[in-house]
Amino acid sequence: MTDRITQLEEALAHQTKLVEELNDMVSTQTREIDLLKRQVKMLIQRAAEDEAANMSGVVVGNQKPPHY
Image 1 (cartoon, one colour):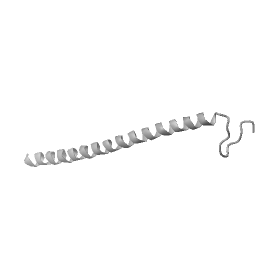
Image 2 (cartoon, helix red, strand yellow):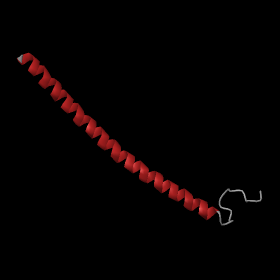
Image 3 (cartoon, rainbow, N blue to C red):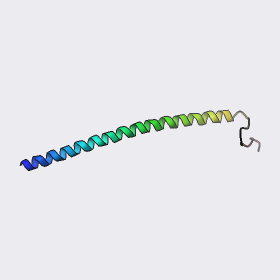
Image 4 (cartoon, helix red, strand yellow):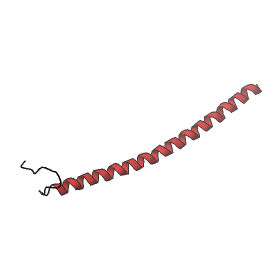
């Protein structure tokens, strides 16, 4: 009986450690996802600003003019 209780306690300790490790991983991934979302939002905004600036009819850099 005590062997069985010891096995259960060991299994519980292992599962507790595993849950803590998984929680740390999820927390890390959540922070990374939040950072990536902010970066994507910034890039979308920057692309929209670039597109709006290029709609002025002025040829910038190596862009071909609209009538080309």
